Length: 72
Image 1 (cartoon, rainbow, N blue to C red):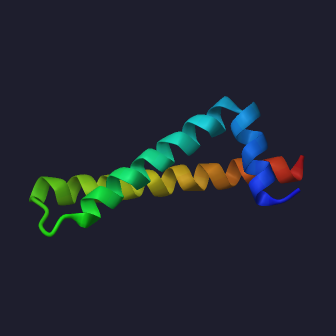
Image 2: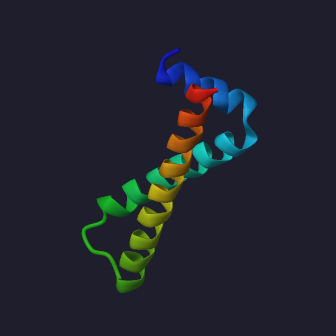
């Protein structure tokens, strides 16, 4: 089974994975919009930093769920 097939199976069958995946994609979208700005306020910079950490944390959890799926 490929990683893409595993991701699709987890999105279909695992609520936690589905939620993490959706939230990760939303953060990615928001961060992309912030990257398009020429200037960020201090608050925006802090929020961007916080969101990047949160996105990375979700990515790590997603990777862990994929690994667990492969091991089962």
